[in-house]
Image 1: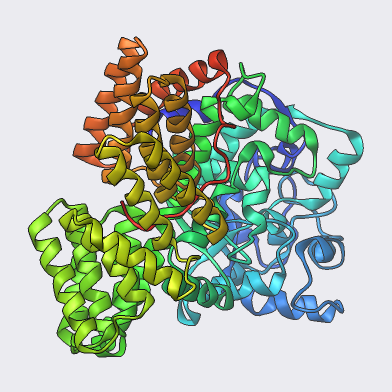
Image 2: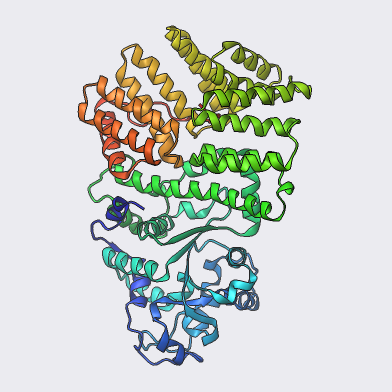
Length: 593
């Protein structure tokens, strides 16, 4: 993770009521008090108290048994069992941390159920205890449960002291808490961020969870996103059948400034820590940077999870993976993380296991064409599209949505307008105008007329494309950012450079909120930003934008320093000229450029 994120997270000192949870418990020396919990004297001598974790086997078996014995179902939330299960465990024991009555759950366990934590769970207390157990077993496998120990705040922090601190209104300096929490993350070394349900996780709605995720990134420790198996199955199925659009929409809602906290003061302190000088967190570049990096990491994981699953299936029997699945995962790699090499590897594996002379084969071949087109290997891309078309025509599939989609790609490869006309007519005949490739078709029609020097007709087609994206439900994705960039070009030709910059700001916002900050589209966007700054007389910002463009071109995601400085200039211009972030909200869609 970038040094800039670390600097952001280590900013000004503030206080937090939640910080007492960690500090009152963690900073006590290991030999404080009298150790009277069963069988733990030997364990305490060899394990630092602040890194003591609960056996994952205990989490999956004994804890669930205790929950059931207390009269609660597996669906009970951590909030529900805190008093009757968690605090009750150490009610009459002397805490080994401070020598007072009442211990943390972990300090009330026998030696065989505790050990130095090598996993830390980042989660919300609104999650069901059964889902947490299922998530751990799904991540580790049953055989590995006894080999790992989990640091989880509800069990490893003394909840008796938390209640006492809350009733006394105690607070500690937030910077002190941050230091202790960072040490905890480093000491454990592997953070598990639990997402459930996958399409509406409480995790990304809680300010503490997003903050913990960003700290794990800043500390550069292992970071895994985990889910209960039923959610993981639903998530994978959504990716394979619907692509990245739902994940784009999900990540677009991740904004630490809009997240919730049980204690409102905690949220204020966290935001002030990230950007102590801001008076408007919606326009804070540092807040945007944290949001962007968290989204980018989550986006990358989503794609990696699908690829990992396919590779596991391939290791058993590559023929058991359908051509449609190979194509779908290759699309995720191309559209989500611009990993062309791995996408090509999967497509070739699909070709080696299945015949290609059918609709599924045509789909895979079309995906190969898009992969080649993104790498600007034009002749090979065109040949792949022609091969896919020949297969569809041989199969009698010329009146299908797939055939219409392919016509749009053929236009990109050949520049022949008749492909767009055929695609548009076929989409409308099939009543498939909700397909994102229909919006993409209209966008290319606009660009065609723009190149012919007809800006008015270009604007008309771009507006139809915008409507198609919105009606189709593709509200947040890079494809619409591409539409905005094209619209900006037309506005620049008319001399309206401020409106052009407004389009670019909204395009940048889309990339920012969905964590897609690599690939040819993002590179072109930065080039256009540099051109626009140059036309507006902002020479320094123009040079900086071109530098970012070159870095994206050479190494992928834009470095934080260049990104922040240019984005700051964008925001400043937006404030002075009044077009800010509100100009073109609500657009979306991604069908390729």
